Image (cartoon, rainbow, N blue to C red; front, side, top):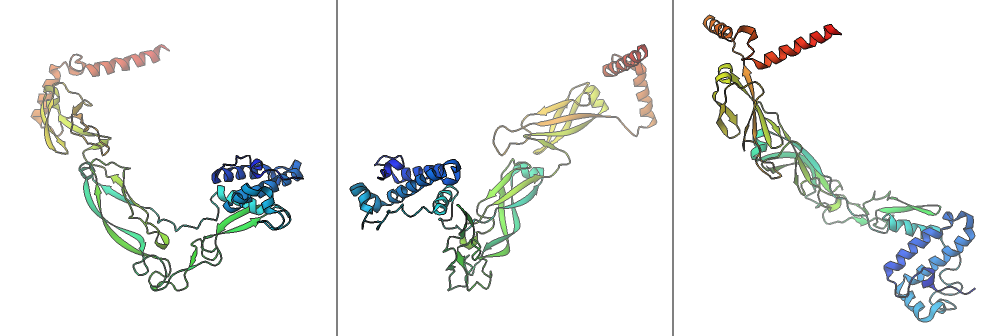
Length: 381
């Protein structure tokens, strides 16, 4: 039976690129593998062999050039491929072809194992509210793994070098055949490094890294809040075998303040005012992060009244307008009264009509009316 044209087998034009050839090969190999065609296994096996043979010729520049010039005759009776059935005869090695397909798709062991980048580190930094709002530069001392200064991260004694692993030939990975599949795993000899150190460094004992503390200066920008992170590139753990170091992330936690509470860009604080100022109005001093400022209290101010002071809050590290300071008033009942003060308050209370002063205590009147209605409803049920 005459062989089909190899380009036709793979469904390609003669000007197909290497990428097109490889893509077609993967697609057809997956489609016609005998394990995936149990009902027509014999037919799939013939098709599979044909695909493999076509790929072996067209993926090799020299063989492809010969095929384009002489056709199948280039590989028959003393041609480039020797005698007999050329490259496809004698039965296909399904484990090889399937290993190639899965190896390319999932990043198989034909690529050399790269030294792994160092781990990222995290440092938890506590800041006062003032430090977080204004920004601050702080020094921190952290434990880390650094590249050995004797062997410069190689792990080998100075004047020597690591040898390429004889088991994996420097790939760091080995393949275990399981039926039609090729399973990739770290090399048991070099543990995935691709190299074996016969004469290790006396300081790091072949690890290429040493433990030590280092002091860093960290600049915290103004406006940070709890949960924000500052990244210091390359200040994490050193990588293995000279690989790049990881990063250090400084995690910010802002401590509670005894006066202010932060809510995004705004600040909140409680402002106690005495009974007289609440009733008659007046001016008081309130704290801000920039110092004391005057706040005008109107007459008849009640507990819970909020006064907004524009621009006295926080400017977020992410930009935008400066927040505000929200002053929550608390009317303070006078304590430790002397006899004269008590008498004056009693006279003042009598002048309001005692406990029934509806005009002067509208909230009390509304509350008492609500209580009366509640009990009347209970009685009438």
